[in-house]
Image 1 (spheres, rainbow, N blue to C red):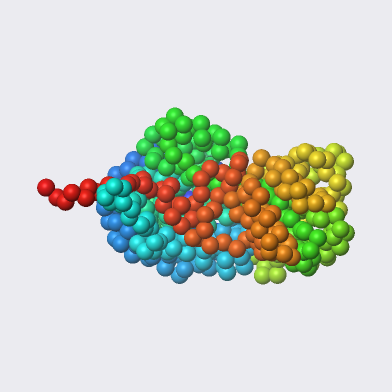
Image 2: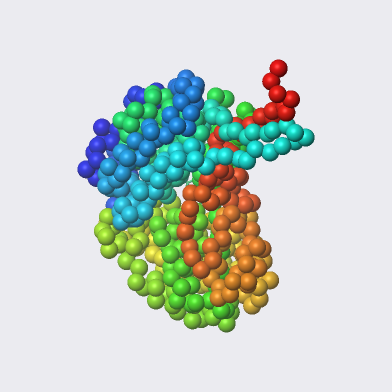
Length: 485
Ligand code: NAD
């Protein structure tokens, strides 16, 4: 047992309702101060095989419960998350460095909601109207599909995991989760709660480990019916290759290089506020609108307002209520971010502010909020995801120009538009390549809405019915009008 932030958490796998050791382990560090948090079980092909086998064995009876039979168990899991919300918040903050106040007020309540929402949706909302074909009646149903493999990243580990676990379990699938090796702990605490809530052994399993080992084994396992992967584009390619061997259906939620567009009629106070929000979670947000595209007539005033907002950002220990910006996840990631900024500088870009490591907490992995100007068109800082507190700013003169700039990367996850006019907003939004567009707002999420990315930002959509379309086998049953004989 480990004790982290006052919370007892088991570092072993959770397979068939039991804790399972591995012969080997990996070290887990806290990004806040680099403190070692303990060794975590390092699973591989054999642990993955045991977990998939357990999930296959549990599938029939879990599926047979139906949405009404599964919902009370899922609601008990959500109740237990809420009852232990403070422990989850403390543990996740110590493990991944995101703000404690966000975990308490936003992220962990959303974890419970991820489970409740889909449990209820499967009962009340998963319906398609019957329709007739030459007098025959068509009835659409969503049947449980089998074992769902869920592979998740570290930037919001439990929230992103449960946003898939919720609909997968509500669909009647059983689950094998591979949490991120840079923030593995809350998945394990969550497993304890599934048992406490009365979930039968094998319905939910966790295999801890390194991506290229446990993750790869899970993606390539022939017993898996669905793969939901959230992470980076290069890893997605490896997962897709492994899935191709078994033709396993997959859902990908990947990276982004999203634009934040500021039109000449924008409320510049709002625009600066929204732009400063792109530094949240130390820039480690897939949806972050890190490319600021600003109309040339308002660029100077906007940049001044943004700089003033950034001055107000307090960087430090994410456990302090007053802190706005915490650490990056890992020294390797910090180095990656620094490399992006150094190369942008050597390519001739200007660093307006930030651009360097800071150390508000000794031993932690902190990078100052950064704004880059005058980057070369097509350069990597304008086209590749940094996943850190680094924004770029470019100016434009016309709507056509900004639409071309906004759509000018391989990604298409989200776009934010700050604009003073609805018809103009509709015209621009309709031309943006993005799974989500926010107009005069940012990060408003609704679990009923479709969520996902276009181009290399993902494959498929989740949320509401779209989640069930993925985790379930959608079936059409056609009844003859000729009665029963
Ligand atoms: P990553 O791709 O390195 O890892 C994600 C997960 O995949 C981890 O659990 C890792 O262990 C596992 N993995 C690594 N190699 C694997 C392999 N060969 N086979 C199977 N699994 C493997 O991503 P990351 O650094 O953890 O997360 C950051 C990325 O995630 C960013 O690109 C970010 O934009 C993206 N992200 C996307 C969304 C979204 O909803 N679109 C949400 C959050 C993060």
